[in-house]
Amino acid sequence: MLTKTKKQKVIKSIALHEGDTGSPEVQVSLLSKKIEELTDHLKKHAKDRHSRRGLLQMVADRQSHLNYLMKKDTKRYNALVKKLNLKKKS
Image (tube, rainbow, N blue to C red):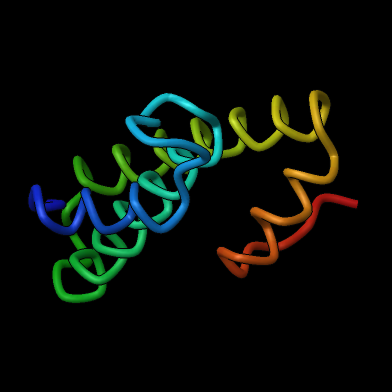
């Protein structure tokens, strides 16, 4: 689970302007951080099916945000993918 301070660090590092919490970049970066933490949890607890389902939902949600950003602004999409070290959609 993301603590308040971790969440604020992620938002500050990627926000487009002061108070930005809803842009696709911020949402994708928060989802990526949650996915990383949940992946670590599932490495320790392989039989936790409920968390695995939540992880798959987060991955799908992140992909939806990335698809939206790719359609709206390709430059911002490419910058975000590069910054977060995600795979580009070809």
